[in-house]
Image (tube, rainbow, N blue to C red):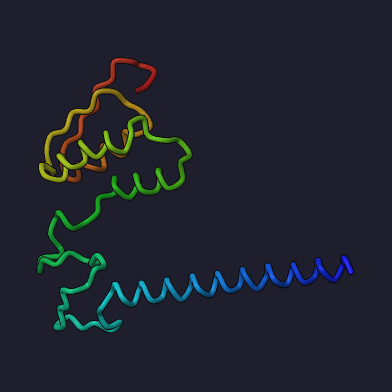
Length: 141
C-alpha cells in the first residue's frame, strides 16, 4: 500500500513538471511572436517599425561606416570577459557612468588611472580612440 502511494506521488510530480514546462514553452512562444510583430522572412523593402525587438543591424544606410564595425580590441574584450571568472573592480552603475559618456564622445582621448582586470574593457569602450593607462606600480605593467 505504501509503495502504491509513492508511485502515485511520483507520477503526479512528473505530470506537474511536464505541465509547467509545456506552459512555459507556450508562454515563451507567444511572447516571442507577440513582441516581434514582423514576418519571419521580412524583405528589405518592408520596414515594419512596430516591432518591440531590437534590430540586429543599424537602421542607417551606411552600415560599413567606421562606427558600425567592431574592432579587434572589442572582440578580445568579449572573449576575455566571457571566459573570465574575475569580476570587475567597479560596480555596474559606476561603469555605466563612464560608458554613457564614452558612447557620446567616442572616439576620443581617454585617460585611465591604473591597470587592473578591467583594463581591456576600458580600451574596448573607446573604439578607434586613444586610451592611455597611467599606472604608478611597476609590478602592474
